[in-house]
Image 1 (cartoon, one colour):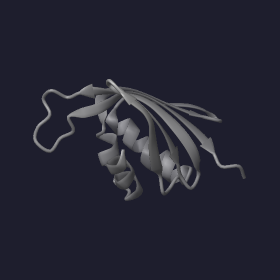
Image 2 (spheres, helix red, strand yellow):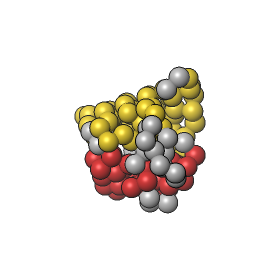
Image 3 (cartoon, helix red, strand yellow):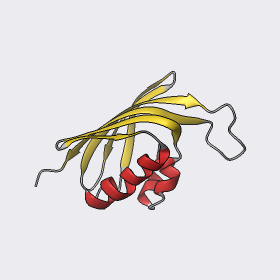
Image 4 (cartoon, one colour):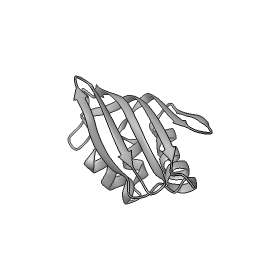
Length: 116
């Protein structure tokens, strides 16, 4: 999670998107409706164009609150609001040297914007 935050905060959204499986199920719950992502390219676009871009979520920091088996839960803060994640991970048995051995398969993200 620390590496994900570092890469996100540095604007390396492609790295962050590659943390998700080729076919993933990501749901972002916001006050204005749900956003769905089904692959790393859609996750990358959401992080870059929506979360960091339109919403302006910068300086993201994660705190893992639960971890076990192939799942984790976390909370996060940013300049634009707070959130939670509830994710499951999948082993990548054919990962090459330098590639991620585990990637996120499902993720439910809840975003709460800061009060105006």
